Length: 241
Image 1: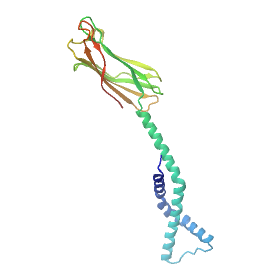
Image 2 (image 1 turned 120 degrees about the horizontal axis):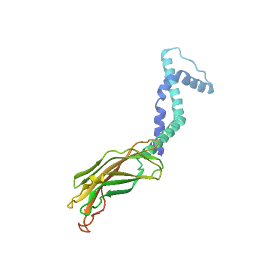
Image 3 (image 1 turned 90 degrees about the vertical axis):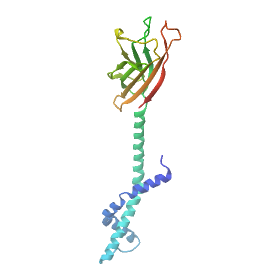
């Protein structure tokens, strides 16, 4: 919302811009006509001088009269309309930016799949549950998913295909190793770390948003090493862009 002083100043600046050049162009018509009308109303007759100094004075006077008329027309009528349109444009742009930056997904489940083969845990895969919490239908895809055990990489999934997610609906992106290719996890391992990025866009497109998470799952052998470890997630890093 414009403050009163700022609003007046913006109106004055708008009225000033372009008024001088218009006055120069319209001085012979608008300025001369205005001077003639004022003199006629006052009962005087306008006489055009026959000498150069007089002509210069009349020309300057006509330009001044034309500028004064144009300035007040722009100040009183055109400036408020122009500032109103500019304010509307700024509001629309701000709403568009807000919509672009608005987070539109939530994570319903983040499942680390580590089966126990009776002797040791095995890394099999990871589930990313993406929920559409917006008022729009969106497309979403996993840009990457990396997993490691104490810094040793055990999974690197490439970009997935885009999937349509209607309003209030969700989907689970699954990253898997084959059962024959499950990665064994040492009984002395400290933690499993998973990081991933989910990108998404609306239908129709309004710009790609990015969502990143990095989770760590410490291996807790509270039940002894003859049983599967407890794996409670801890968020290491997250951002939305």
